[in-house]
Image: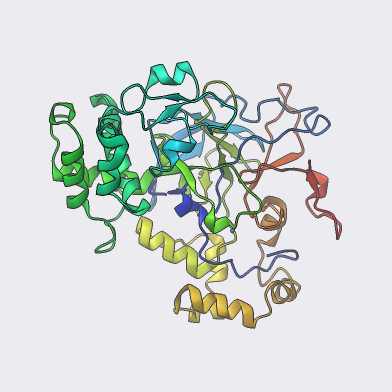
Length: 441
């Protein structure tokens, strides 16, 4: 795939530039979509037929890699898949902090939140990072990153990258260059993103910063500007965001990633604007595997059908989706939904950027105008049912709802979980009565 959480199924995945021209009958939310909420307190009644762990165990026979005409490699259903089934549960090949500020708030090894009540253990070498447990302290964090942080408690790194936009790729490089050779080769085997726009990323400057911050004897063989540029291409095209804890009072565009991760198999998931799967992460859950990515089926998927996720929030409008896909991944989407929405006049004529789109939404009367438009019937937007069933209606969220996994005896859960805010909704509440949220607390 050349996806970005993803996108970077990422705050990049998680930052909508503006809402989709909705035709859904209720309310009209980057790597968005994302999936990065801490596990909700699951109601006993709702979970009666579902496993206690909403990640369950991924079936080894659910997916296979396939070469898809016009789409490159992707993942397809190796057999019939049922709704809610865990298709993939994969540990990260590489984890790295999103910014220097993350080092103070999250464990440097597993990225669980460090709370005031937790006994954080400072890194014995750099003292700038901390760990949530002795086990994580023993696992340590990337050696080049630790070495760079050792100088003045990270003052040198902060001076080299004063802005978070520069810190993120620099932290990635220091972490990637810390990998053992087989893992570094695995990163380099991933698909590459298209070149960034001129001036968007200074690969030469980032390479020089790594060379200045990292002790020469720790740098791998082959360290070069070309290798650095190649690694940055892999990061842009394949990293998933692991988000900060969801805060309903924080605007979606201000919610940030705590860390980024590369998952080799999940990176093969291609994009669709009406996906049949979505991904979750549970970074604050107890036990091992808290940074594993979990991909669940939204609905039944027949054998041989490609399994796709959305690289951004499902309620983005046509023009925004096409712009993001072209800029970040180098392609235009021609899925069924895009073919329908490409005929909408205001999207065809809208080439004035996000501000113009937002003004247009205000002129149309906001949500009321969208509801009137949706009332015209299915001819204008035949995919409206998808949004009613799978888009979270929790105010200000707009994450994706996926069924909880079936029970061990195969019984469907009939309970949906949001991959952003973590709330649960019973299936019968997919069309809640007016004044009811339909959410399980």
